[in-house]
Length: 567
Image 1 (cartoon, helix red, strand yellow):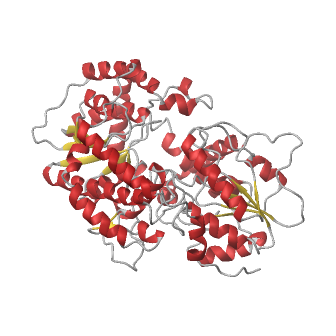
Image 2 (image 1 turned 30 degrees about the vertical axis):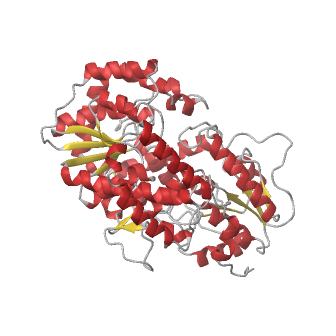
Image 3 (image 1 turned 90 degrees about the horizontal axis):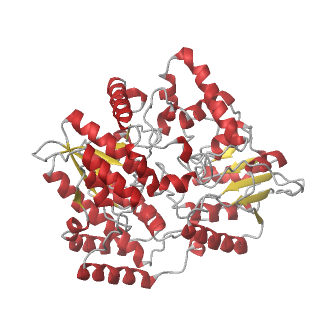
């Protein structure tokens, strides 16, 4: 059944949160006060941070910057990454004859400067360096802000040929905990200013310093993403360094939009390197592995996926527990109506909708509103499951709850499930198809033969076991015919993906360096414990073994770049 086409412009405005006209003024006042009385002082070191600083200062002597190449790193607030950086960057600097430096803009009161300088990475780009670029950034931001006519215009912002819009969009949603871009919100203007000050200051830094390598913990938000794109434009390799196990992953410069055209062209932010894993190359990378081993590797991927579907906890997938826990006895999630039942797996509305290379909609909110309206005349029963992963983030949880309340009132034909309902129960009770933006359900439900429809680029894009519509019109046809969808799913492809996604880059036989003790990841409290300063106390555990393991790992990486890096 074909539902009448609905323009996004007619749907999305009703999803817009109330304008926050005073918020930008409030931010400006805070900024003025901070400048007048000095930047916020960091909190004093706690016992774990003191232990980390003491060890690092005794272990690594600061390298004098006498003009040697600079290994520059983002001051991540994530303690496990700080721990990994301390060892890895010193090993890299010694091997490559580099000095160390860091950049960061202190959105929190954590004493980041003290922690990074302890292992030799003094901050060379921060709030002070941004100040002299504020006036030109403010003028250009005001011009850009006045010219915005749609949310897509925000995602398309680019400066001097470099895409910034997707970084601005995702930073605005996350830092201000918003569900969608409000073109009247002064906080959006301030986020554009943030991106531009980082752009101008980052360009100046790269002009005057010999930066030979950049490490970032993410490429999704303006703090790390802007400098990463400036570096890639200049041919400087940019790496992610995940912490468990530690794996050097180079962002693929082939994805960088070197030639961004003007308005009306392909979206400027659509081919930007920010993925920590090279999903778009999984098949190619797997094919390069020894043929005699591939069957066994698929079996390992299948085993890992079966463990997750059985309810085994994995904090890398879901922070607070498993999405496949046993169903509550005697309670049904789905009703019996005789119509096909379709599940929609919602996302955190403020959490990085542009994490991948492209998106059919401006954000998760716009996709949700469009999908729910289109679903009304499909002849199916539609069930929406809110994302369960916001339990550790109060602000995110409050936003999601508020948005879900609005959606319930607006779309009474959609059945809203509690976020705690088990995906295993949905499978057992029988759903015909699943719709997601880019969720892990793409391979989880495909593994049991259920068709999954994505809404743009996603981790499974390299494989044919999902639907990957390339336009909103194509997605609309899939929604209209949701009750009749069928897809030939090769379980071996799903197992191959599961290996690449969950095993390959965590293979202890190749990636031998691990900074998180097993004792810290054995319960749903793992994410909280690992993210606390407690992890820094692990700095002095078996240091000689860590040094040796890092050197051995770097030998392998330099000898066989294809295993983890772009060829």
